[in-house]
Length: 262
Image 1 (cartoon, rainbow, N blue to C red):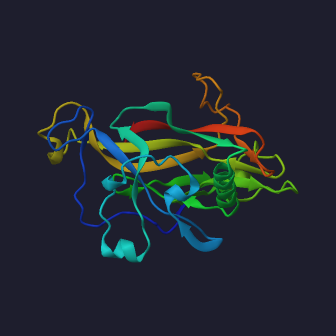
Image 2 (image 1 turned 60 degrees about the vertical axis):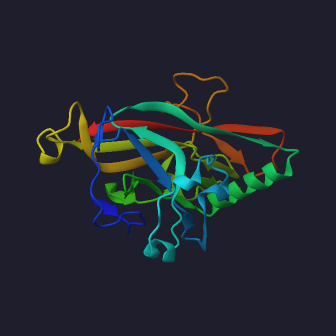
Image 3 (image 1 turned 45 degrees about the vertical axis):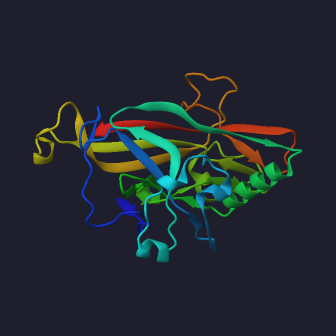
């Protein structure tokens, strides 16, 4: 059984579906933008804009889609991101950005502490691809699968070694007083080919329309030097200790993209 939480999304009824091509053509782009929305938490009423947590944000925000009145009223703040896709092109361990935090830099320490606070309060990302929310699905009790239109920034293991929130779904999250950051995402995109559809009759090559967009958030401690196994399932996890930052902390935000045909 699959359970789907009420959708917190950018979807606007009535918008025409977009057809994408491997090679861009007239009215058939190959590039697909990933948008980010404000983060929220069921543990607090205060939402935060995406840049508040010092994620990868050095892009031109003038490219933000225009929000309608309803979206503004409900507090949506949709922004472009450093993540992007090319239709039907798989990507492995692509770097969105690198972050460096230094003990002697007070601003760095404050940013890192705020990120940890967001993890402890279980703040949720809300990403949008092709006008639909990225959905996070995971197994719960009774072999059921629960799907949510948001996914967590990370999860926390308390000083009593109690695994909170998403930490319960991964046996590697065990260190006391540790914040596990989900700094990598696997994007699983499914598309419907248009070879037998009227809307694809004038197009060439491989093309289709996106019908599903799912995300699998992961915590990865990437090696200092790039390696083919940097984002492998066996990669070590990235744990941020609850104690004060000592020295320098450096890590990457990365993503992989996998396409399948419906």
